[in-house]
Picture 1 (tube, one colour):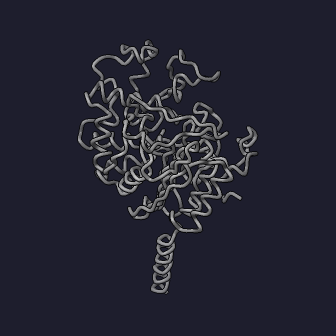
Picture 2 (picture 1 turned 45 degrees about the vertical axis):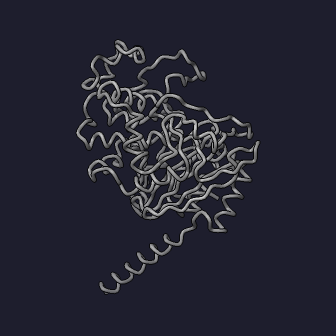
Picture 3 (picture 1 turned 30 degrees about the horizontal axis):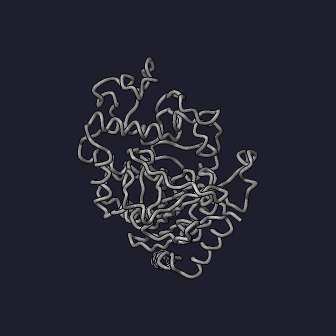
Amino acid sequence: MKRRLCLLALCLSAAAATARERAPQPGDAALDAQVERLMREAKVPGLGLAVIHDGRVALKAYGLRDAETASPLDADTTMYAASLTKGTFAYAVMTLVDAGKLDLDRSIADYLPKPLPDYAKYADLAGDERWRKLTPRLLLSHQSGFPNFRYFTDHGYDASAKLYFAFDPGTRFAYSGEGINLLQFVIENGLGIDVGALMQQRVFDRFGMRRTSMTWRDDFAADLAIGYDEDAKPLGHHRRDSVRAAGSMDTTLADYAKFVAAFSRGEGLSPAAYATLLKRQATIDSVQQFPTLSTDATTDNRGIGLGYGLGWAVYRTPQGRAFFKSGHDDGTNNLALCVRNGRDCVLILSNSSNAESIFAYLIRATLGETCFPWFWENYIPYDHPEWREPAARKTPHPPCTPIH
């Protein structure tokens, strides 16, 4: 009996492996038709899709990079990475940890040559000694206590708004680009390491990402994606001239797929550093990721153990560990998701504010049921506008329940 059970388990395992090997990939007629239909119905002009299995990459670009000139999107089109930058930065930071140059649990006060509020950029924190509690671990896991950005207020954008602690560092999760940019500041001013050069050497050069940069390059202009808002209004492409760890990276579908494939295997990091990066550092019980300082809580994601590692969100599936990083800005929606302990990944890059409304369907079409926390990420399906209403935040949205 024991032998029969073992044989059955082996057969089931082999069948599951075969199913994964035969999972739909970009270029398959049925998947291509589904992607194109979803893009058409949700009004998404351009989208790049990559599916990665055991490091093997299949990718395809769909639609247009520039609707006005009817220029097609391709795998080498320069696209804005938005907050995918944060996850890539976290990888680069862990190379510093491996090299013994950075201690995740050491106060940033130990690295800076003078107190943080003595720098003009952080003068708002004068008189609040809580900044000394900040460590690289807390900054990378979004436990800094800062709002997402100081200029995002309850009353809208305010360029004169001051930086402040909304809660004590280390006491809860709240997504914060301010925290990520502060770690960049510490690395540059405390360690004397240029983050742009660090990213180039430790990531882009390492993985052959020739059309990826933390700042604008003139050679990007010949094949460039124009961003579009929800009403298909062109927004152009912001040519960023300064390095921002929270989100200044330009990349391509082909380039970032190389990074995701390597990252899914932990290439370039020690096993200990890789495990630490993807270990849950903060538990997430918020209803949605934004607004970041909302205290509305839910148990919807408790079953998957949703949390944040270092630069990447993490959760559990019946098939093993899963991790992901999203990127969102006006005219840009992106996602990198890996499941089954990194064996299977999907990468989606788009030039549209509408693309997130088809992400849940694209995940299921390429990876099957993954228990992805789509409502927490605010990936509201285009054909369920009622879930965008405030009342929907008070109703259950279990991540393991298929969307219909």
